[in-house]
Length: 262
Image 1 (cartoon, rainbow, N blue to C red):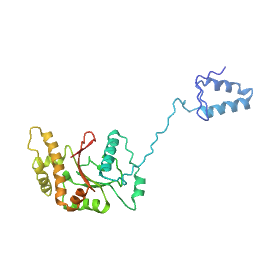
Image 2 (cartoon, one colour):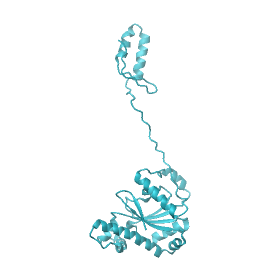
Image 3 (cartoon, helix red, strand yellow):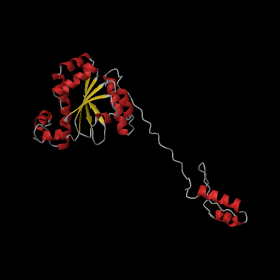
Image 4 (cartoon, one colour):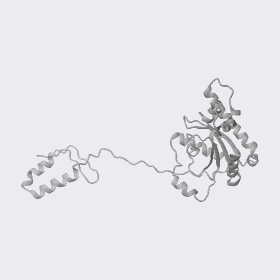
């Protein structure tokens, strides 16, 4: 019987014959020339049977990551630009500062972050991720409602005066539980005094509850910035000298976008 191979694929080392009658034809005549035909048939069966036809070629995706080092920024404006660019990458799903192993190795002997961020403790608002900064590019302090106290101020003073950070960012966000608690006059142990610090920022327009929460959160950011400048002579002096800037930022947990506010 003549060979009727309807599909022949080559994938480096083997051929696939869809019509197995070809093999049986060889085996049928093996009685006359057993050695030649048997070896030929067995060889082809060995290299083709059980192998699926190669119809597509799959190329492994390039998963190489790089790290963008922002520790050498020269001023606060460059630090802001680095944060904005990082947030754009985060929103677009094109983060690059994820080579944590390399970052750990690079920062094991020291750190010099250009930016200090005071943000809420909300689990949905991790500054290192939403700004795509990875390890070593940010000082981060976190507390419910992104409020400041003497401990926060001491941390900021160390970052700016000792290490040389050039930018302080106070970042709040929408749907903030601490802000909601302050508006609702919630009370619970030590949380009561924390919420009391937010209450002066409460918007008195309660017509739209969600808008009231947003306005209160933004007022709270501005109030925290004022607190920092009034209660830290070190930071106030650095700001007046132009060595440090303080900016407010507002994170949208629904979109991942950060907007800077004055």
